Image (cartoon, rainbow, N blue to C red):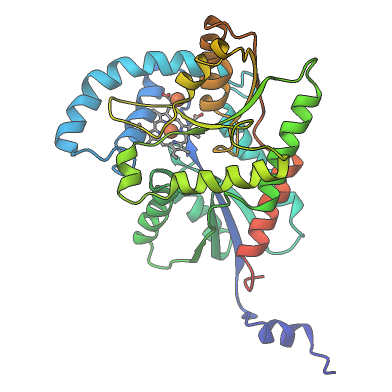
Length: 345
Ligand SMILES: C=CC1=C(C)c2cc3[nH]c(cc4nc(cc5[nH]c(cc1n2)c(C)c5CCC(=O)O)C(CCC(=O)O)=C4C)c(C)c3C=C
Ligand SMILES: [Fe+2]
Ligand SMILES: [Fe+2]
């Protein structure tokens, strides 16, 4: 058996001795800077002007968006953000969780030449700024991790677009890798299952039904080839298998409809408000389309849907937390980074 010196071992593994550091950039959707009208309007304007998100001719869409939608929607969204705002840090929960994930992941990875940072697709900190900051700290290889469990052109692809738009402005570009989505990664499924088990164990009575609600998408995008619902089905298949439940005891629905066209069905609100009529009055809802709790889980499910369910005759709706920055989320992110940076470190 030959014994190589550490530098020869690095060369044998295909790594250059002179290489710089490896950076990891976690990227989430984005969130307003405050709950004030101006900040919410700016955030929604950037988000809803993304042609990956709204696939409508901008000559038709922009007058509608800049006119009636951005005049009225910020009031409704502002009220919802105020209900869930992290007052201690004066920021939205999505920002709190994303920052905590990056900090804890940095601590969890073995201490070597790997730097972890985070960015938002819309708003701040921007992808371009954080890529530049990683480069300034000596990173010549950067792994981008879009924090969406299931791939969609409206989320994952637009993160990737923005990464490469930032690279278009660089003379000296880092090498880039993009981590794939992780709809049925065993550690994601295990984290979700544990969140279900821990939450249900803390209830005085078992719910009549466990339901999974995913963020929705216009059906038109799926017909055009977006694989998002197929990835949601992969999550559900694995999670049902892990929990020993079938589609009847653990159904899935889609939330967050926006606009008039048909979105993925069944719709969460319609399905849930019909349950009390069938004698199902206590439900628990999990949201496996989100790695972190945000306005869509905390307010749309935990507040709006709960009120609708109670008004329809329901007795209790329990919201099961996302993985957020708990140890299961960090174990998942660590495994993803180790897998996807293979050969770089
Ligand atoms: C109008 C079109 C929208 C599409 C298509 C869409 C897809 C999509 N979004 C997420 C994840 C998140 N969306 C969030 C908020 C949010 N989403 C839309 C609209 C679309 N999303 C709006 C208008 C908003 C803002 C909130 C509101 O005003 O109601 C968030 C939370 C952000 C936060 O700050 O908490 C996430 C996360 C996915 C996964 C997805 C497609 C699969
Ligand atoms: Fe959304
Ligand atoms: Fe929503």
